[in-house]
Length: 90
Length: 271
Image 1: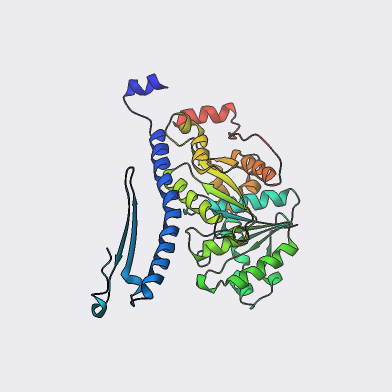
Image 2: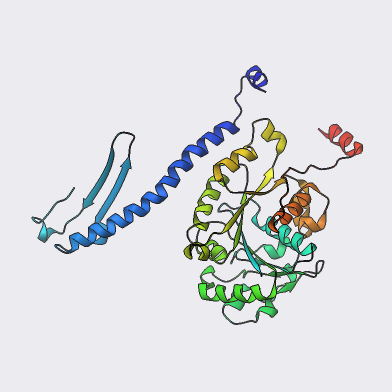
């Protein structure tokens, strides 16, 4: 088969499809568990903050980037105008 | 003990309805009491594929909402007497399906039949979730094509997390049905091979349905393919799949059409 493909100079497409799927699905499956973790984090962090200041559920953004060397957990909370001196967590 | 089976895929157009009809008919042809239930509210097609479109009076929604008795909505197949169909509604909104109503209907069907086969709508929304919720087993219909495999992976995740069995900590049996498979293209590296799909999705293989003209011919006629041409390659694959569903262990092969010399000559002259 390989001499045939090299003869015609065209790589078969199925192995490319398989490799793309394996990479994509590894990523998506990891993401599924992650989004659960994120929503749990969001819920608990919000609970703590609510004890001190009133913030809107939608004004809390949590993001996680998992890199090879460094992973980053980014928490962005928009605090209402009146309580501004209390905290600006970022 | 009745078994509830959902035929699902995530992606549309991969052969859920065709496979529901064929698996249901094949099980009924072996003497089992089978009902096939269309969950695709608003886009019902199982009735059409099975040739029962002119016999629909009441539907799943009518039964769920208590406007009709189950016995009034069930349509008995005219060719296989142990096969029945419960059609979906064509006019109603899918929100008319309530979880409680569906639970009640499935419970009642479990008492009457050996197999309750639920034809899921495409997508991962409410309709698809309700179709899979009560399932003991699932057939994941997949084409050897990237978008179909990806969507199947997603559906497998849902089967393991959002179904009644999953919530009770029980396991749901999942089977892969690979449809529209072309072994010669796979051998040439032009199509994902069965092994590739199995490795990626890692659920057991129920069967490989080869791409075949017989499937379109069957739906043209309003017959499950296992009835319109029981000896054709896809039919043999469905019959084997059904034996595996019943617990038999069989080696999986891709059935091919048995062509005579005349067919071969004819094909050659056309090509």
